[in-house]
Amino acid sequence: MKMQLAEIAKALNSSVNMGEDKVITSVVFDSRKATPNSLFIPLAGVRDGHDFVSNAMANGAEATLWKKGHEGKPTDVPVIEVEDPLTALQSLAKYYLGKVNPTVVGITGSNGKTTTKDMVAAVLAKRFNVHKTQANFNNEIGVPVTILEMKPSTEILVLEMGMDRPGQLHHLSELVRPDVCVITMIGEAHIEFFGTRDKIADAKMEITDFLKEDGKFIYNGDEPLLEERAAKIKQDKSTFGFREEDTVFATTFRSYMHHATFEVNDSEQQFKIPMIGKHNVSNALAAISVGRHFGENDEQIAQALANFTPTANRMQWKKGDVGEAIMDDVYNSNPTAVKAVTTSFGQVMVKDGGRRIAVLGDMLELGDESAELHASLANALDPAIINELYLYGPEMKNLYDALVDKYPAANLHYYPQDEMNHMIDDLKNDIKPDDIVMLKGSHGMHLEKVLDRLM
Image (cartoon, rainbow, N blue to C red; front, top):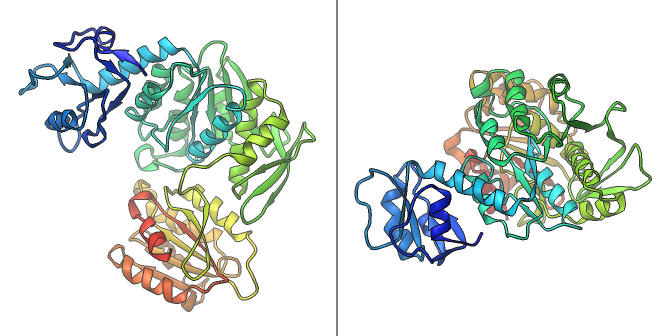
């Protein structure tokens, strides 16, 4: 972005007390990340953002928003008063989005939305100026900040859009009014707040609430819950998946240690992605569908998919300190994702004498069904394939109990949440150079600390 304070104030139906000609090129809500030419947004959180305005200004911010009626308004720096800073941030993003007027691709789903976002952006960047969500900045704060970060020359804006409660995607859809909507899949993520997968599907479909009349809806055709709901969408639709009924479906699929290859039903082009697993092939099928919608040919799409860079901590291979290969997938976790990643990990070949070792941390936000869903992972685990299991956290005790008659005692290890260091020490003593190791757990379990120690 690049706007004078006077323009920002006008967009927010307000005024600025001084410095109207100052140029703003970014917004920040963390005072530690303030830089010259930035506008500070004092959001309400554990601490009131207004308490950090002076810090933001000291770090280089040019101006700040300020909630009307809030005590202590500074008089020596540029201030724009607003009814609510978060609402103002969203309004400013909506204004700037209209000013730049890019084509908007909105992507959601219980799993795969970050990877799909990265794939789609790579495919479209072959011919267009593309701006995409960084990391998983996908909520009511992250989406407007992403919008305000895009350059005026942006032609296509690829937005990851997340939700953890009903109505959230409706609000984000209204904010961005997408030209293309993508739903990767429906799983159990956030089921604590929804109760059933049906209600999760209803909430995911909210991304289409403000899909433009001439827009496109691209969704996973292998999910019956989406098929039922998509019937009500009047805009153009297409599906992807592994069924012959899908618009684009994979006809072959091969997974190797560092990549996967596949073909699709209506093309002679072979596709390759630098990730493993059927679920990532599904994400690539979504990206192919989006690319084709924008006129990309399959050769261009294949080249982009083969060379795209995934967001960190998504099934990335790293080398441990004794030479073992470690699959780093510690960013987030839910039952669908664990089963998919475990299946993919189980297909990776190991050297003679090597073992597959999985470290699984609790899956959070599963509510009343947490114990049952953790225990259900037992169906996806076979000691002949996943040879050694390290289970970490109070909820993983349910999986441990479900596996005691399935796994030899020497190959099944459980650690309460306060025993991470004990688990790491045992892992380091156990792992051999020819082993391969998988780390998977919800972000709140901090398995990245295990990764750091193993490396």
